[in-house]
Length: 60
Length: 151
Length: 248
Image (cartoon, rainbow over all chains, first blue to last red; front, side):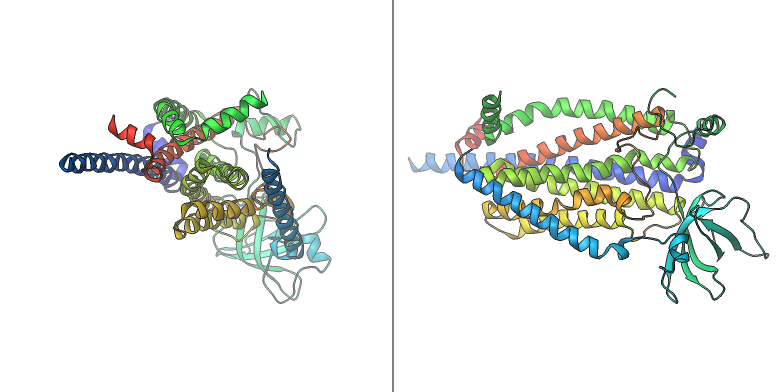
């Protein structure tokens, strides 16, 4: 099987490859968005925690 | 489990049973509408609607596919191994259309009992195998393939 | 054995324990997923033979069928969470249910679109209102309904209980999807793998299919853990364990 034959998928290239492309997009999104959300939440909490500490220090 | 949890669990079970029974009855009542197509036998028995579009499903009988004109018009006979119906269609056929194939046609009956289709869809079976395996099976006279192991 | 299970059940349900455990598992699961998906794709796109009837177009099966299985599997996970929420009032189950919904909706959407891309060349149409396709579309609306309902209620404890009921009621759709092709005439063909007979697919096509199905299952756990971790941090932001976690 040659490479161009492989990409041609017996004439069904549009249907097969767009199916796989959509799968890839959805899998990447469902992995990346939660990953970013988790990092963001953690960063936000850290910032808040540092701020609280500073406020407490200045009061004493 | 505490009594309170037991009670909540039995309420949930009651809810699921109730909903299932309700949906079951609804589907039973709608049965005719959910059926996607009529078989040639249904048409013979007069179950199919007259003067209204409906779908007919069956197998294309080998040797009946004919192209009477120059254009895209095609004629063939559909069967469910019980009754037959003649179908006329003008248009592009799906890739899977061939003799011996399961087909669903959408259209209506004309006065002479022929089915004038506006759309033809191919139904494929649930078997997946390379052509060599299919040939070998046809030769050995096996009809329903069932082989999960070792080919 | 049962006592041990109950103990484990309650420990697993504690947010700090789950958060830590999920974090430990994530890299291993990602590795496993990579191996499975590479093997499955190679087996499906390169090694598997051409189909006798559908030619190369059948190769959509390796994403379509696992996605369709996932759409039902994730729904059953959510319905189980719903029962745990209503009976045991477990907070973690609320988080898992709400976090699983968008993943399930994605897989349902994927199953519908890939099916339609397969239907066009083979059946001759992108869409028909047959029992299988319609019930799968209803499943997508159930997922969207659960996401919308959860988002619309501000008190997340109340929201958790509301979506639990919706998830449990929607469960009746799952057997309808599975048996739709047997109970009614449909354009969609009958089951190939999930039937009582032996699967009617050759082994060289079946193993990539099962490998992809397993890869999608692992992927679901990865995506779910990631989401649950993010959501737990947010929900429990005022608790001791989060404070300690942030401090370190």
